[in-house]
Image (cartoon, rainbow, N blue to C red; front, side):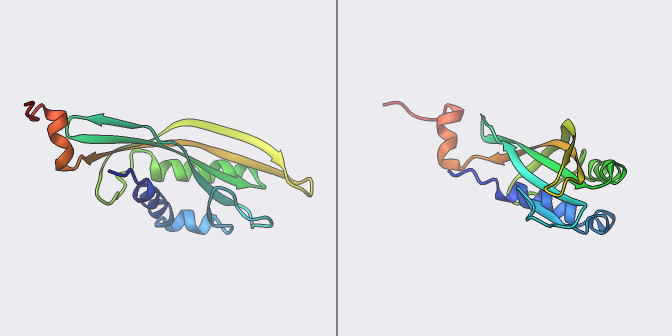
Length: 152
C-alpha cells in the first residue's frame, strides 16, 4: 500500500484557487515551495510541513500539515489576504479523492518581516493548516488488523 499525499495537496490547492476573491488578490499567483525570483507581490506559497500516518482498525488516518504563506510588500495586504485564506481553509471540507476529510484547521500562525535583494521590506504572514483524512485499508490487510487471521 502506498501513501500518496498528492490528492490531499490537490484538494487544498483546488480549494484555494477556486475562490475568486483570493485569486484576484494574488497577482503573483500560487506557488509550491518557493516563488520564482521577480514574482509580483502579493503571492501565496504552500508546502507540506509534516505528514505522519496513524494506522487504525480498518483504516489509516493521514495528518498532513501544510505551510501556507502570503508574501506582500504591504503588511496590511498580507494580513488581509491571510485572513481570507483562513476563512477559506479553516474547517473546510476538502474534496480529497479516495479519502474522507476529517478536518482542515489552522494549528499555528507566523508573521515575519524580511527584505528582498533590493532592500525592500517583504511581509510573510500565514501558518500551518492541518488536514486529516481517513483512507480505508485494502481488504488484504484487514485480516491482520481485525483478528480474523487464522493461525495454523
